[in-house]
Amino acid sequence: MKLKYFSIFKSFLDYKIYNKPFLAGFKLTYKCNLKCHHCPFWKNKGDDLSFKNVKDVLDNMYYEGARVIIFEGGEPTLWKDNNFTFNDVLDYAKKKFISVNFTTNGLNGFEYNADAIWVSFDGLEKNHNKIRGEGVFEKVIKNLEDYRRKKIFFVNKRKVFANICINSYNVHEIPKLIIFLKKFIDGITIQFYYPYENDFSLFVNKKERVWILNKLKELKKRGYPILDSLSCLDDLKYNTWKCHPELLINAEPDGTIIKGCYVKNRGEINCKYCGFAAHVELSKAFDLKFGSILTGIKAFC
Ligand code: SF4
Image 1 (cartoon, rainbow, N blue to C red):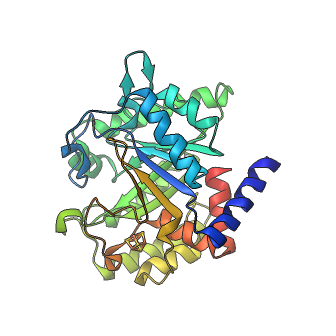
Image 2: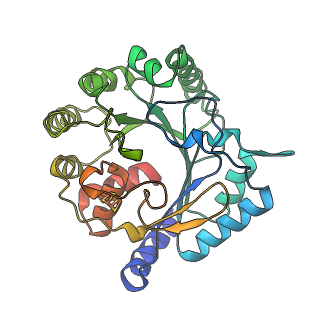
């Protein structure tokens, strides 16, 4: 644990002095077992990298300075190269990175060797299924229940968080969703829908955005396990944080590595519409904001 904190401190200096990134995002595959309305990535085609090439990408991102990694997709648990599976990728990443994590739709369960897993939620049953497909909500909740049962018997210790993408369909039921999810997960993070391809159909307007952020603050103060800091929730109202996109490094399924904002090369960057709370928190943590540092520790340490 001491080594982990030392490594984070060194990364802090590396960013301040050399502008090195800290957080790596690796889209391991565009393949997905869902076709969610708000996600542009499953529509992309292309072969996945071999295990050897995946390892090269991980080595490169580590060499550039990244110390925390989040795999995503598509659905990253679907990645495969002959006998090598996603767990082999996680095992290799764990030899290098101080925290290895992934996001998932939760359909393939949570038996993976990551430090933390983020399962995506888009609302309660009706809205989640409207965006993700019939029956998906029930399957994910069943997988979470199975996982919790094993966790009680100490079969595994990894954390499972919910990540809620807030959009114009679900914004009003987010408080109910958080109350519902509390017993299934170890924490909750949020982000706002980003209008890729200039599609504003799910975009949350300013009035609703301020309303839900105030509600989230209230719930957090009442003890609901919202990981986002109060100051991050405040900054998201009018996008008043100072972003440090250089802290990010992202890899695509073909191995292309891009430094900077998550949206770079994936859509038009418009900070006015940004609602990537994780990046807000990361930027604020590197500006030494206490609440954001605490969020980072809870999520990654
Ligand atoms: S879109 Fe968001 S993460 Fe990207 S540079 Fe702008 S504020 Fe930062």
